[in-house]
Image (tube, rainbow, N blue to C red; front, side, top):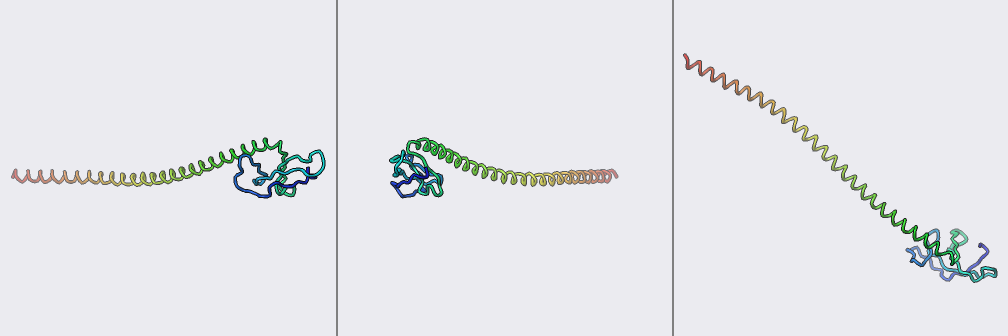
Amino acid sequence: MASHTSISSSRTRSRASPLPHQVVCYHNEVVPLRVVRYDGPTKGKHFYGCSYWPRTCGFFKWLDEVDDVRELQQIVGERDCQIAELNTEKDELKEKVRRLKDKKEKLVDEVEEMGIATAETMFELKENKKDKKLMLALVFSWAFFTLILFMK
């Protein structure tokens, strides 16, 4: 395979999303369709090879093998979309958890404040009961004193 030299039918490189009929290499560039020019059993055969092939990329597919590659690339693209959707959903759920934790914290603070207020109210009620008993004792003592005064 490395002995095949080719002339590219297109030298433009694209990092944009490939069209459905385009083939992309391992570093996500649209690869040009090439033709084997040297004599041999594959002369005139069409293949896809990255613009960097064979130096760095290593992507090479005969034209008749491309349908398999396109199917796999489509599956990979669909999986990438699913991963992006799941990441978005994960981020939304993280934000929802954060908001719920904040809400829980506020509710805990409110419950603590209500507990303190309830304890203060209970204390005041106990104090009021003592005050009522003292007031009642005072009234009875005045009534008793008045009764004794009138009996004399």
